Picture 1 (cartoon, rainbow, N blue to C red):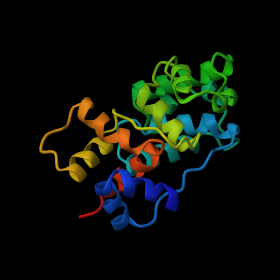
Picture 2 (picture 1 turned 180 degrees about the horizontal axis):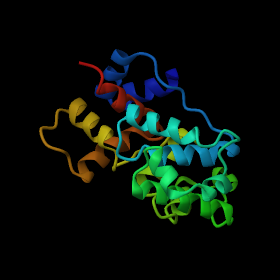
Picture 3 (picture 1 turned 135 degrees about the vertical axis):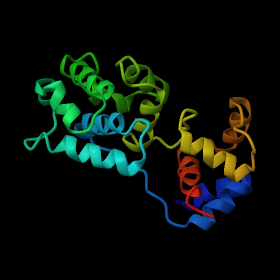
Length: 201
């Protein structure tokens, strides 16, 4: 992680900074190419409410359905039963079709998303049934590489805050907001520390 970011945490949140030092190496945020946006959204939908390993296994099976490449048109042509056979739940199979239809019909213009603000990106994405704030926030973080995003709906982040700040019960949004305000403009990087902190004793 960039020294400038670590120094920001050291100055504004020593507790978080201390955990970052125990973790060491971090995933580097990178901006994906627009041609990968559809794939990344499909991946995030597939991973909703699943552990990393389970999500990866299902998405691998899903990708094997498309040896010629994953496109909205290809997903629209895929039978619902085939998506279910790859491990998608009934709901997720429908969500993938919803996304494919929105992109195919140009209702959702993926290539233009990077030119929008974080709030505008979320607004655009949540219009597709099956994409909620969590999915949109993960897209901002890991596809658009936005540095200042936090997801209140992410269980791992809530667990990380509980662990690092010693809460016995889940803190309310007001308490969480008070903590994460100190991280700006690097909330995404702080989120990486929170997720990694769950692996540290």
